Length: 389
Ligand SMILES: [Fe+2]
Image 1 (cartoon, helix red, strand yellow):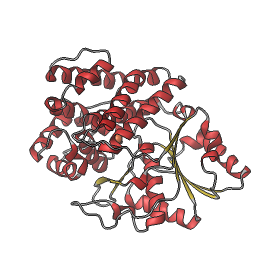
Image 2 (spheres, rainbow, N blue to C red; image 1 turned 60 degrees about the vertical axis):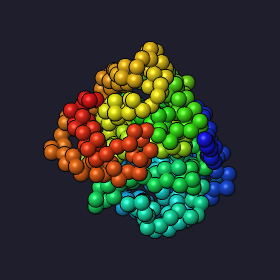
Image 3 (cartoon, rainbow, N blue to C red; image 1 turned 90 degrees about the vertical axis):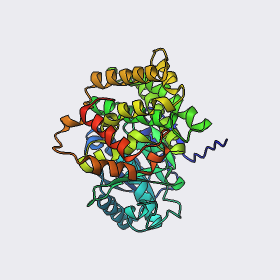
Image 4 (cartoon, rainbow, N blue to C red; image 1 turned 120 degrees about the horizontal axis):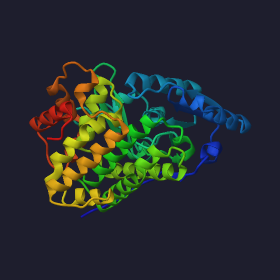
């Protein structure tokens, strides 16, 4: 047995921490900030950043407009802008895609090439990450991907639309700031959708086929925080303590999958996002129930432990899986997240193509129960119908 933890990221949980962000970058002279479309500008967060940088004589360049599923060419263009600016520090401010883009930009700034060069296809990548990235500060504005606490970043190829992740210890951010005041700006729909990503990651980390003492502890702890706070952050958006706990739950889920990777539901979610631009958390939610049912006989008592966190009794493998799926369905209904793929207006979906893409995601090999092409194809038909079996 071996259980190893390596985690080089400073994690700060502080309400209003974004107003003293420069505390976490003491040597910065030229800061390149990556963010989404308009939310941070509208909320005055970017003005706060501009004022901090001006008073500390730090040159600031803000790149706005990171989309939900960034293309590799988008990331390369941001990296070009960053290089032209001559940044010495990168800030990722926004949802998981903004943080992921910031990580990839910080990495190609020191390692060169295109971000896609570092994506493994068929087990091989064109380039390897060999040099530490530029210092990178992650300030997530959602409680979902846990990108602030993982060594991963995900991107979609602009032509093939294949969505894949890269992983390396250098991709851990230098600092992660969880600021409940920023999380309180999230629209309710995003609270729900990103929360399902956190839930999925916590569950996949907890039940991974590669589980270790560390990954189980972080996964279970994340599930506990999510069970206690997911509905609370939806029902009471101004409850900053609940926001902080949900954010910490998402970060712990990230820590868990940072050790053992995600598995079945996430691997299946990637082609749905890459090919059809479905937001990551929504794509994960679409695939979660069929994956729970598929794995039920191979996770020991972990589904029983999980349903207990939600106030239900454990039973046989089938009973605990059914209870967990009922808990999950209740939340999707309450939050209005549609988990029937057929309702997404996609026309005909090539089930073999999405299955092939999912099987190309290396993380699928860490699933607790080995999967075949036929298994995954069948699971996609369940995702299409919105049923778990
Ligand atoms: Fe995720």
